[in-house]
Image (cartoon, rainbow, N blue to C red; front, side, top):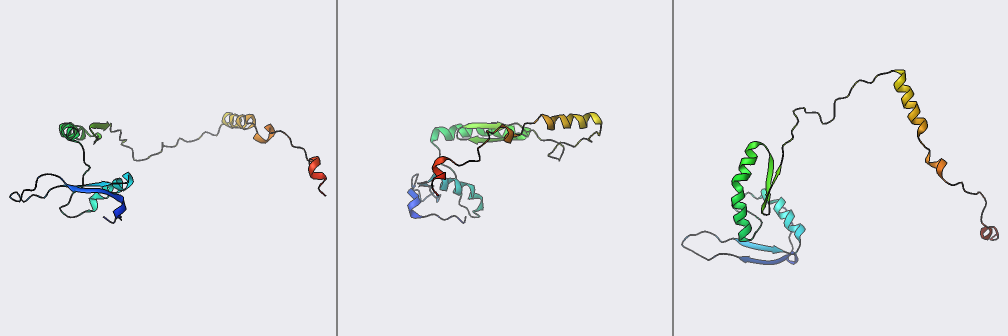
Length: 150
């Protein structure tokens, strides 16, 4: 995954489940990290693993059951064309507002060169205030304390 992990960043590592040699199924490992940002980095890069190892976030049992119940609803919304995902124990659905037009900007309209438009533009320029005109004028003389230094 090309992620550097120091021993100081790991809080606790342990296996869950009962060891059963008859099934030959490996038990899951829970890794508790000190920094949440490192956890997010690992979860973002989990697609880079090309082996049989998979990485998921650990949730409480009640949340896992709720997520399992929301899965059919998630598939239904995806089939409708909406962008959706499950966040913790809630289904988040974002309506699909795709434009058929490929341009991101609005198409430009041709400008008219009438004198009324030019006069309107000139009036707007004249009505703008200059910020420097609004400032208080400063005196050019030095204060008395600085004049006595020479």
